[in-house]
Image (cartoon, rainbow, N blue to C red):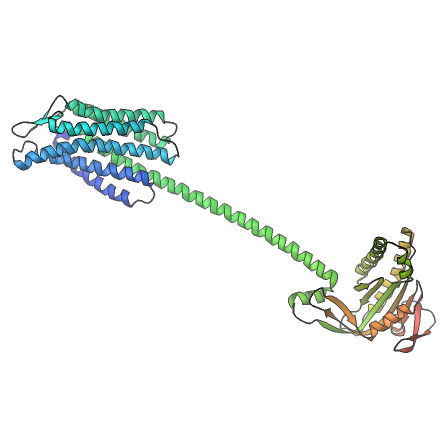
Length: 466
């Protein structure tokens, strides 16, 4: 105690400087809530002014001059005032702890405000009546009986705050419990010691020391909170990135599926080579000349009379089933379906720029297979169908017509003759032109040559594929 009595002025000076510095640091801190920042700044400024009051009192106590008379009285009043302000600021700090947890502050903290106000009123009255303290003729400070009351108000505030802390022990983080208990208990112990040693300001130095420790903890706690927030932000960003990647993958997969569907749909309408060219150059006019292509036409014999005895649904169902059989065979044998026109079916092969190819042979095999498909169809369904097939080989032009609902088609004399071969043929027979015969006579058997009158061509040699 002798050491503290001897050097307490110097200790107060150091503590005061620290309080001013940390008050400035608190004011510029961005990681502390507004309410807690206000409480900390009030604590630090009140502590600094409390020490200044003590230092001023120690400097002028017993100084009989006019300056000394004013200084000791002002400093002693300020000392009592700032003691109450420190405790009231600490009360605001406790309120901020509840606010941060989004909890309703304990009602006892409001009682503290009432005790603080009452203590302030009594302090003002005591200052002018000499109830707390008096000064002798040499201007020395003297305790009076009412001095005990001046200790009672701070002690009562600390005790109420201590009870409040106990009541809210489950709502306050364990890390801060020890600190706030120490902040409350240490001044109480220091006040009891100080009461027995006149001239020792241990309670003030202890309180200011705890304010400094509280600031250090608050900064550390805010840094921990910021670090947690950064970690949470990083986790959220990583989670968002993963979700975004998953969404991109899903959309990419959906886009691939949609593109695949669109491609398949396009391939159902156009040959692969034409579809790729149209996809790459949508606005381009697509046309090709093929020197040696083979064209096939089929038609159902007596379809008009047959369909008149069927409902619309039965007619479409029959055509769909038969066309499906033809389409499946065309896909298996590498034949390019061109289109269907009513009951007519049009296909081609050798649609390439080679002057020699096996398109004619493929079409002939395909035609024989179509007859087999019709026989299979007749066995499975009630209606009995017969078809005529016509084939011709030669040069033609192919291309895409239109911009909307476009269609791939072929034109030329070769196509017209193939159509005439079909219309002049016989049911369930394959009628081929002389050109087709010349390219396939080594691979298939044919009937004797027949001369057929073809519109626009005159008499032409034709044969039936056996």
